[in-house]
Image 1 (cartoon, rainbow, N blue to C red):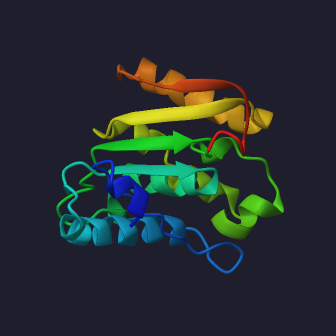
Image 2 (image 1 turned 45 degrees about the horizontal axis):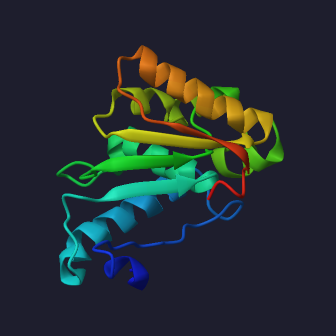
Length: 174
């Protein structure tokens, strides 16, 4: 739990997750699920409200939190229990990722499985409010991932609040 946030009537947790190449696909979303479940079980002890949990992720963690929300297999039996999702510069549509060793290390070398592992379609269907944010100076691929997600959410009739941060890069956006 992040101590400074409590003084402002907020609580925060910053869990880690297993990393590739030792951890393969599912590990990130499973780790997010474990963190959400722990938070739901324990937040009241710290003065927090389990009905007001927002989940945020940047870059690879953005992909992991998006996957957690988008795919019910990772939710607790009672559902996702989230008030909102903040996505900072992640990969949401895995059908468009470059074919390279970074993605193969985590998602596997069989790119035919990437569509089913992608959070994109599930994000369009979830009832969780989504707040995407991205920087002007993102790598072009990540810039397009955010823009495409926002456009698809809007096309799906979602009320989308998003922010494009001029002058910010993939790192400075956080």
